[in-house]
View 1: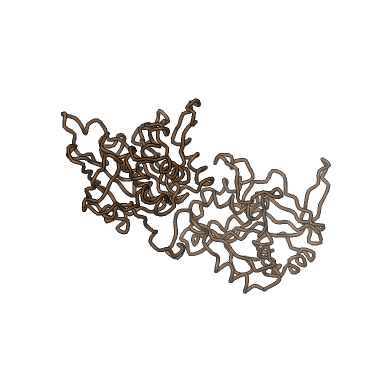
View 2: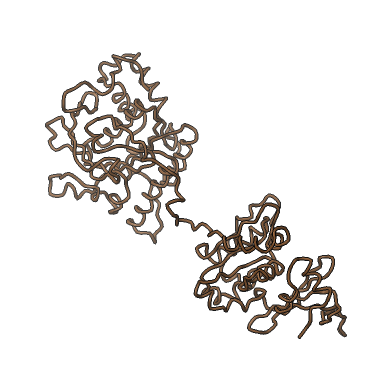
Length: 517
C-alpha cells in the first residue's frame, strides 16, 4: 500500500484533517520522475513532496490528481472523469434516503466532511467553472444533455445511474461566484427538489475554512442544518407573505356590484349577441372606474374607429347628456376627461400604417402603457378582430387556452383589470331566433368559461323595452361576487345604463357639474 509520508501528513495536519483518514482513502505522497520518453510521471515515494489523490471508481484507480508546493495542481492524462471518492455513492443509505450525498468543490473540503463523520462525501474533479467579472454566476447558458458526455460535467454523466438512485444531495461548494456557478450547474442536473445547501459563517468560504476557524462541531452543525433549495412552483404556507383579500372596485351600478366586484389582476370576459350593447356597457363601466377611482384605461378597439365613433360613445358616457345638449364647454370638459383617463392602442392614429396587430403586439404595447401612463384597465374589443397568429401544429382550442393564459398573466403581473369582449358563434342565432348566449358559446374553446375570473353576458330579451340584463355567469371567488342577473334601464339618448329603481344617476351629469375625475 502506498504511504502518506511526513510532508503529506503535515499538509493535512495544517488543514486540521486527520492524516490517517486521508491515508485510509488511498491518498499518498510521491515524487515526479522523468520517464524514458521525456515525459514526467508521479511515482509513490513516502519522502516525496507531491500529494496524490487517487480517483477510485469501482474499487480501482481511474485517475489521479496531484498537489505540489506552490499551489501547483495537475491530473494524470487520460483519466476517467468521475467524482473523487465515487464509490461511496454505492452506499445503500443514499438510495434509502437516510443519508445525503455531500458534494464539495475540492478534495480538501470533502476530506473535512469525512473527517467530521460524513463518509458519503464526494468532490467534483475539476473545481468550479470560471465566472467573468460582472457576470451573474447563476445565469446559465443553454446546454444539451448529451453534451455532458464529453464536457466539463462528464463526471456527472459517467455517474448518471448512481445519481438517479440517490434521494438527497447537500451542495457544500465554495461561497464565491465560481462556487455559485457550480451549484447552479449541479442543480439543473440533479434537480432542486433533491438538493440542500449549507450556509457558511461570515468570513468562511468553504468547509475547511469552517473547520479551521470554528472547529468540527460547527462543520457538523451546518451540514445537519443544510436548507432545501427552493423548488420553483412548490411552496409551504409560510413561504407566502401575509395578504388580505384584494381590494374590489365598483362597476358603477350598485345592483351589479352585488354580483360583480372588480379587482386588479383579474381577467373579465364580456359576451353577448351583436347589437345588444356589450361594448357600450363595457365603455360605460370604464368611465365609471375612471370617475370614481381615477383609473387610466387602455382601449384596443378594432371594430370601430377611435375617432369619431369610440370618442362619441365615451362623450355620451362621460357627459350623461344626449349629444343635442352638448355645448362647447361640455365637450371641452368631457374631452379633457377622456384625454386624462383613456389611451388607445392602435397601429397608427392616421390609419396609414398597416401592422399585424397580433396578441403579442397588443400586450407589448399594453405593457408600455402601464409604464408610461400607469393604466389600471386594458380593454380588448372585440377578440375576433385581433390578428390571431398560431402555428399550424396548434389547434384553435390550444391557441385560445394559451392566449387567455397570456392575458391573465399580463393582468396579474401588471396589476390591471383585463377585459376581453368576445362575440358568440353564429350558432346562437340558428333557426332564426336568437337565444341568450353563454360563455361556452364563444368561438374556440371552453377556456372562455374556465380561464376568466369573471364572465358576463349582456342580453336584451325584448328589443321593444329599454331594458338590458347583465348576467354574471362566473365569479371565481366569493369575495368578488356571485352568479346572477341584474336588469338595468337602457337610456338610448346617452347610450347609458341606470338603475331600474328610477333613482338619480350614480354620477353628476356634465351639465350640472363640469368635473370629471
